[in-house]
Image 1 (cartoon, one colour):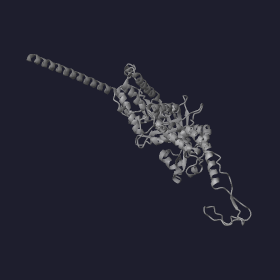
Image 2: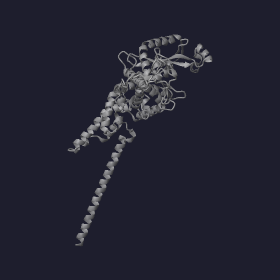
Image 3: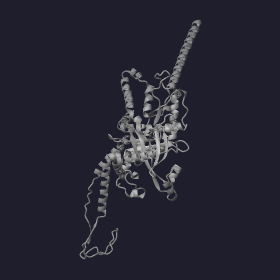
Image 4: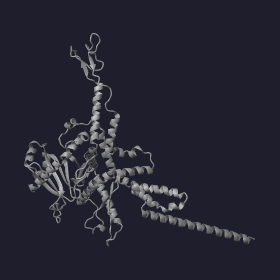
Length: 547
């Protein structure tokens, strides 16, 4: 381990901090008004000091941020359902011709997907809580980072990294490929984490001040000197360095096959690396409504407890302002009040209508109004509900599509890499043994993905309505629609469990049973008719013989 790499990382960190300084000032303002527990971009206030420095007089923005994060989670990564599946597209047979995906491969992908979700939502993984924190930071600062690594004892472990601790850079394609995390550990934690590699100054501090904090950097980026013939960290695509500011020392070097930091950006401006969030867009309204509420509070206090006017001549004994108290000497001998309140007027300078307008603008920035569309109008037909879902999917598609490609896609790749390296994935079927590199595609099945497909479902429902209308004067029109395929596609769009529907093979078997039953009934009917005819013929013969 050479210190030249440590110097390179520290110089890059200093350059990144200088370039992001203007954005940090904006983020500090956002934190002070919206997310006070993250207010450490330009200041280092913790504990009670952070609470005393609060500038929040109205809770609209903090509450809207909580709703935003909850809505993003429910639309993108709901913890109660499978929000993605694994697939393989463009499958080819041994002659390199397009072919259907073999059933064994399809079943294996389903098993891998189940293993992935089981590891992700295991008790010790903490994915749901950390993903929610990432969405909170995304709404406040427009950026979020979720780190995934192998947990001690196996499995996955997630950690949401605050934006104040995170810096990153893009490659030539605009993809984040380099991440710096600057954070602190106590001297005792340094010894636990790095052991003998801990700088001497920190080792000495651990003996006298074990809770004293020291800064370090975790840098992950593309490995420039990778030896692809090696199987250890020197042959991995991404390098990982831990660098200490104390002594400017490279503490540990390792590697990753995939980027373990999944970085999310809400929206970006041209020639900018970092994203911008809803709170930044609504910062003017957020500061305005806090100023409005502060003015209302001060005005109300002035009306309820106005300043008192006293004459500078003479004096009064101990003065009491409590209800029901008696103040002797507060009247002159002719009954004139010697103490009078200052009349500041009873009219509020700011109307509730002004505050409501500002509050609505903030809620719109955080998409609160959009997410309430279906909640506020529950009495809707299926077509109306799907039309609303279509509108929601169209409005959310640009932002959510970015989150799928920048956050969830790299996250799933890192998860699969960790589980495969630990031998936790099921064995591959023979059909995949000949492939040098097995690459699975991700099919998102979240409520957002279904909302984006609602236009197709809406078209199907309208087609069925048209078929019913045409069928009133031409019954043969209904036969043009494939009933089972139509129902199967609607169930897929709406996210109904696949197990509720019969498979095509089951439908064929059921159709065969129905055909056999119909044939048997026809045969029984024909036999009955023949028996009846024979009986009638026999009866006719008896009658003729009797004559």
